[in-house]
Each structure stands twice: as structure tokens, then as C-alpha cells.
Image (cartoon, rainbow, N blue to C red; front, side, top):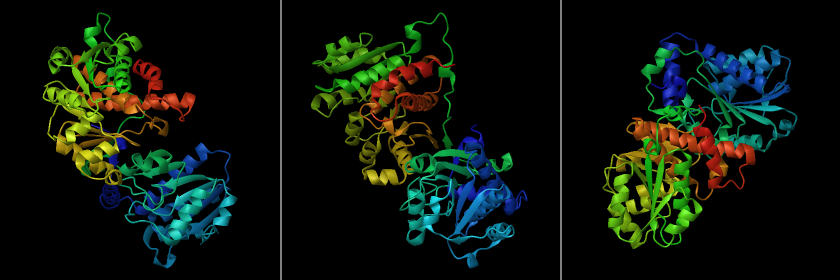
Length: 497
């Protein structure tokens, strides 16, 4: 069972947790607001100890109430504080009104927003809009968000960046681009995918001491993968193991002139630690693969019957890298697709699947947003507008496991969706998906031999691939990062016990 701190929640679920804490456990709403302010200000102080000038931009809801109490705490600590207020304060009620009055009691009063005054501040606290936003921001709200984004000051979002949809992670017009988001009670699922990755910056979660038992009353079907790699695939190997003990991956693809993709996938499978890797590819370049990577057993395929012994020997089949959509490609696809062996489908294997949709429990589909759109018969924008819904629909339509790649990759299996918090923009480069397919194949093959559940292997593989990208970018930068640059980092990470 995933601890609640790793669960992901919709805005409605978080509001329900808040309601239960207040009504069922008797925790005053103002107490929760005070805790949120204290946690946020503590994060600000610990991360930027030299800062002492704070600007808080508040709305009139509870998010704005949090902001008022953050301003109050900063004032009490001797900071230079200015507060801007948007919205009609005459309409403010309840805890948010109480928070504003508490701030006023120490001589700190909100002003009308003035973008010119953002120049003389170290940190801007975004306490404008909370998790209930479902339509595009406009008017003064939009212009304020744009002014905050133009500022060179550090930006801290309270609970969620204003303008971001808490459920889908999509910007609603424009959202604040925070350096830090301090989120409360439940991790909002939109922070971890789509635009949420670009808007949230570093994310710090605080449950505000909500009793653990309340989380059982609001079950979550979404979870966050660990920031640090963990799991049985990191365990040391037995001294008496041999290459057959660690799995055999067959990579199938590489139509005429497209051997690079299948080469990347096969090399990634080796570097991830499986014992054997075979490649079934077009006869024109089978020998070239052997020259580039002699550890790969490369086979030219002209007659589909040549695939049979290769399939029989493999534990898992990766189908699609560089496969193309020629007659040769479709013949291979239909020859392999009915195997009982686990399958990883990528690239053109997914495009061929569109023409013959079917369900299989033994495969892992790995679409990027464009391929996902073809699988569902919709536009890429529709996929990106709700990635959680998209990955679930693909998994329901085709069965098995679906990995929707992109900023904040999502993995759907049965009724559970997991989000990967790792990865970086440098990984948006050619061949990165081929490497992922090889990593997936290798982890699944090793899982089979170690009696590990395949979904656990898939989740580990996605994390490993993303973590390798992050490690590589940390050393060499994001721009110009190549898919093959990940190989030494994959090898290093898979050996960290």
C-alpha cells in the first residue's frame, strides 16, 4: 500500500479531506490555514536564508487567506513585506477574512496590485487562486499572473500555481511559473504532468498533520513514483548466476534504412542488465548491428518463419523501434502479435495497431502524445488536455499496461495510474523512446527470472530511464543530450544498491 504522502488526489478529493478534517476530526479551518502558512514560510526561510523582502499577492479565497498569514509571519520575523490584494474584499468571509484581519492587526494592509513594485523584492508568494479553478484566467487576474512571471524574483506558489488546473496539469490561459510549490493535505495530480511540470518548480508536500485514518475514507487510485530508485531489481545478483539467469530480450524492428532505433533499444536492454539480447531486423543491415555492438545477436529477417526460433528463445519481445509501415513491417507485426510472451510495443508497432485494434493482457504500450492520439482517434491537443484520462482510455481500449510518455510520464494498469516525477526537457530528443523500450524489455525479462510482478518492473523501468536522463543532464546539461548518452548512467544506477 502506498502511503498517503505518495498518493495523488484530484481537487475534489483534497477538498473532501479538508472537510473531513474540519467536520469529523474537529480541526478548525483557521488552524489548517495557520499550519499551511507556517509550513510555507519555513520552506522559504530554509531554502533562501539570505532573503528578507517578501511580496505576497492574494486573492479573496482560502488561498489568499494562506497568503495573508504568510505575510503576517514574515512581518513578525522582521522582513520587509508588501501585500497586494485582488478581488472584492467585501465578499471575503470565514477563515480567509479572519486571516486578513489578523494581518491587519499588526499594521500590515493589502494594496491594489502594482506591477512596478515587484522590482524591489526577493520573493513573490502566489496566493491568488486555489485548486477550484476550471476556466481560463482573464482580465486583471491574467495580467497579474503575467506580471508575476515577468519578474526576476523567486516565486513560491501556495498549494498550486495560480492558473493551473489541479486535475489535468494544464494552464488555463496562463499560470504562474513557480520556483517552489508548497502543496497541502494531498498532492494535486496536476502538479506532476503536462504544464504542471513547467509551472510547479520544486514541489514540497505537507499533510498539515491530518490524521492518517482520514485518507482511508478518500481512496486514491493515482500515485507518485519514488524520487529515488528502489525495488528488487536493484538487489545484488547471486554468485552462481549465469547469462540465462537474467533474461533474454528480442528486439524486433529496423526496416530498411532504419537500423538506428533498433540498435538503441537493443543496447539499452544490455546496459540495463539482461543477460542476452537478440535483434530481428531487415537483412540489409543485420551485419552492421553486429559490427557496432558485437554483444548483440543480430538476425536478418526475410521470411517470417525465421522469427519463430527467436521468439521461442526470448523471454520478452520489444516490437516497433524503426519498424516502419512497409509490407515487411506489417508482416512482422501480425506474425508476432499473437505470441503468449510479454510484449513491449513502441513507435510504428503502435501505428500498425491502430489499423487492427485489439486487447491483450500481455503487452506494454508506450505511446508519445501523437501516437496516443492515433490510438484513440483524436487530436494530440485532446491527449494533452487531460493526460490522466487519455492514458486510462488507452489502457481500457487495448488492455495490458500503457505508458504515456512526455513531461510527467503516466503509467496505467487496471485502476491505478502512476506519475513519474523524474525526467527533464533534454530528454525530448530523437531515440529517447527507443532507449525506454529497451529498458522496459530488459527490466521485464529480469523480473520474469526473479519472480517479480511485471507492473513493478514497468514502473521501475520508467523511473530508471528518467533518472538516467536527470543524472546525465546534471553533469553535461540538457541541451544536446543524446539518447545514447544515457547508457553509462543507466548502468551506474542499476548497480546502486
